[in-house]
Length: 249
Image (tube, rainbow, N blue to C red; front, side):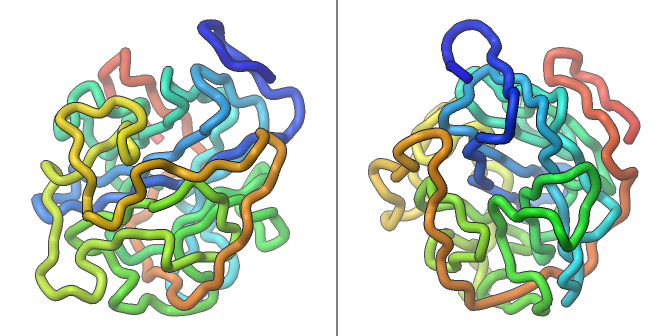
């Protein structure tokens, strides 16, 4: 596939994609969102079965509800996909508004992963993950009332705790409101309005694989699997930000 001004399509699975931010801001669940980044695929129509799934509690098998299949969805002009609970919290920053009790509605203590396949399965390939399936949530990994922001652009099919900025994590009361979140902008890339790095430790530039088909190294994992979140319809279609209306899932 090639990038450029015209939409591009995938003919076989060769996409680089990773989670860049997940938010459960302190000022309410309507500000929850998930941000994915496809560094080599801008304005790109996905024709592969790529799932966003959860691992609830200490389960090592992904939950069948909620999840979403990215097939027939499109990255934005910067290569991002932002899935929000509510449009009003981040006007013009959400690519797909899913509503409550969907995969975007993460309470801050639930593992999230990108996998291949038609439906969630323990046999599916994990492309990227925040959390450790089969383990309960640890406090230092929790982002209840806050957010997590990826440091570097390397796929981690095994959780790499050191590649994430976590609020609050193990710092008591280090919460983050929605005004501290930046959907559609990742460390200076994308729709970055008045962007400031989330911490001094953020890298000034990101590290990417050398080609769209290369794979990043898997980091060491040290922690959790999240606890149960809300329920939603599996695999339903979301509406584009251009329509500004909520699609039932």
